[in-house]
Length: 496
Image 1: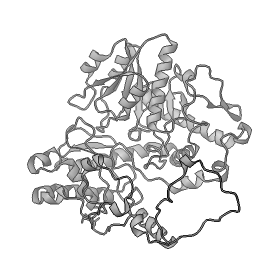
Image 2: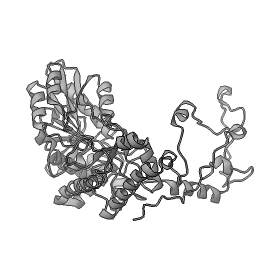
Image 3: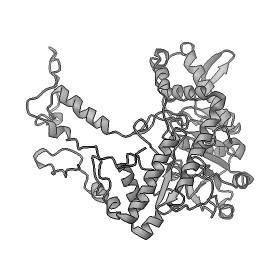
Image 4: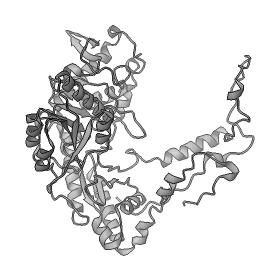
């Protein structure tokens, strides 16, 4: 695979810049109906200035934009903690079957038996993967799964008459963890990471008390490391009467290998749009089901899907339920795709995680002599390197490395996260990628390290072959241009 920078991209004018007065793509029909009386306060003073183009030019414009879109279908996408794996097309065909696609959410249970059975079987599969007995499919994203899990914690302790108000998170936690804690009305306490990349048990013991409701933890962590003291962690919390919440963002590393319930976790959320191949990005759609222990099952959102003999139904009779967290029964199309993905693997689903871990360790082994490795351990499905050696020796930052990767036709990894690693580069290759694709990425990363020493200005000014060059991100945040200003619009700098 070539690692020569890609310079084939060219700039595309704004649709307003393509506009020519008097051109039309078509005319809408004008019905012979009376014009409604619009209140004076709501009437426009003049018609809106809209772009005027012929239909072929409109099609060409949006096709050019689509051609510039980068995704897992166009190249390597090692975005750490995002699990950008291939989404099999057969899943789309199945989600588009008329019996699924055209089903109305208010359909009676008798007329939706196929859909309800699929949901019930998906619940059972997810329960087995987590090692916990009960599942709700309602949450529509991992972040909503987090909030749902914390609401379940609150309901659990309220029902027991316990006043607990604090949630502990790791200093490597995803940003949604502290946000969810705040939204759920809890106080936040952070625990440090030790020299091995595990939770610092001494710091943890000092912070857990009778006000602690629970722990939110990703395992493996965002460092890509499995916590070596997870059993001790669970014992600390359970001895204090608190609960453990498993952030399933990194579940792709352990499916079929280890189960969160067996580790001691009481509540688990899944990201169907990551681990189980529902396409994601651009705002969704996603799926964030939640699994729980028997003691928390009564509080799950209603309705749940239950089986009565050979029939399936939605169970609304749940007096202790926290109520709905999403309209209807959840994002059904996501369920179909994820169910199909798991059924395609069958008993071999474990191989998905094994290959993801193998790929990550292969890439790590080939890059550890070029970039700093903050925690010298075998990784799980992802790993974190640091560009601090390049910054110290050549003034090159993680941002410079990420921008230069774009010239090699590779999506940058996650950078500057987790926050405990300076100049962090979080890399997740997933099980999707063949060896030659991994080798191409390694070659690009090694070449960039050489460029940092030989011609650092090339990295400082990257990307060179993209439609948009290096942005002034501070100015973009402080002086955003949110609409086209026509004659007063700023002159754009040619990016080619």
